[in-house]
Length: 94
Image (cartoon, rainbow, N blue to C red; front, top):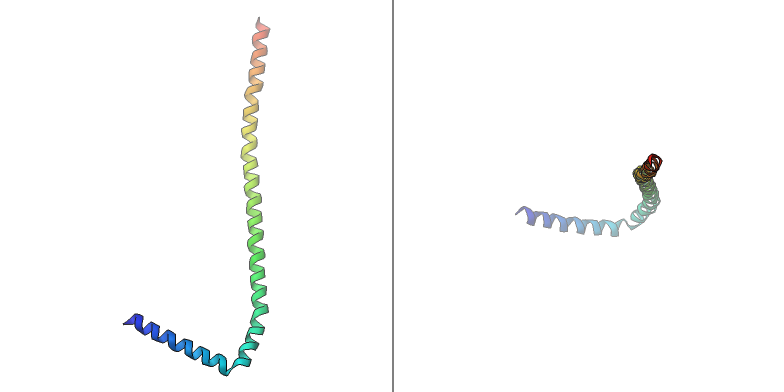
């Protein structure tokens, strides 16, 4: 019964809304004229904040990736130096 009551109330509200738009068309248009610029400003600010944070996050991820890759590269280079120094030591002993 509650679902049927919700549907009936929804239909009544739609009809009242349509009657209100027709009866107060001028006020409705003025309200839209006032709301659209304000809505554009709010949406613009939200988009700027969102994409600035996305750019910062991608820059931070890139910096973290570089920070983790550089030590790995250093570790790969160090054994080569040890191998060459160990090779020199064995050659010196001969």
